[in-house]
Image (cartoon, rainbow, N blue to C red; front, side):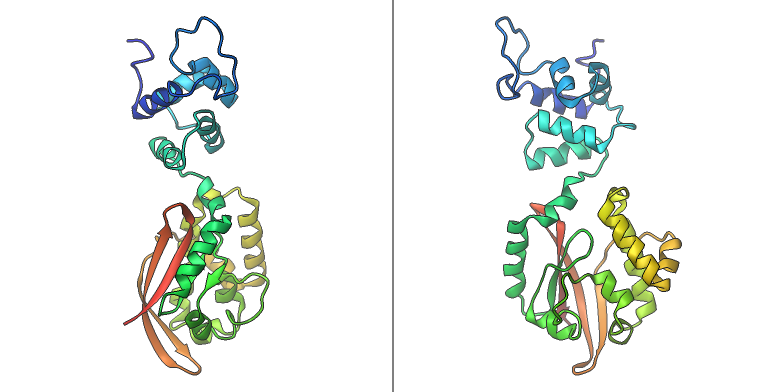
Length: 261
């Protein structure tokens, strides 16, 4: 069986899309006697900086040692759209690292900021490092003493572990703090070598013994909704149901709503 047929769903997808890209689109000379439809495997491999053999292995689904950077170059060479890039990474069993960088997209942040302002209950936006680029007036009231203060960049982990208000405001702070660290570990698993992640973690571990202790426990949990209770100095004890949504075209951003029970 030849290697054109000895492929996987990933290989079928790659081959189909390289047949759609012309040499001119890829910045290559067209040549006068081309029998191949679209780009040859050797041409795609050269554009990605890998060998044709390595590309053949990828097409056969042998992706255990394929880096995210290689997949990103392959997506670029094939001129894939956003949805197609995500599909490529999913077929290869990896998470698209572009998701984290899309959180800094000004248009996405602006769209979420407008949405947050129209929500009647407390709501805020989290990026991939849990900085808070947008929130509404109700959230500023709930987190009075933090979100209503002129900090350069508000960060939920900084609030939880470094702000004196957090243990008073957040009901059952030890349980919530433990879960928050486990959720953050799960969310940044694809960015372990990211310098921004390292700087954030180093600062928190250095400044908070509680965070350092919880981080060393290696707990991992998915982000879930459920009841969130607060002991507010003016409002008294208030309880909400938390709902978290991701933006379709910028999955690195999350809209967090605290809905009145």
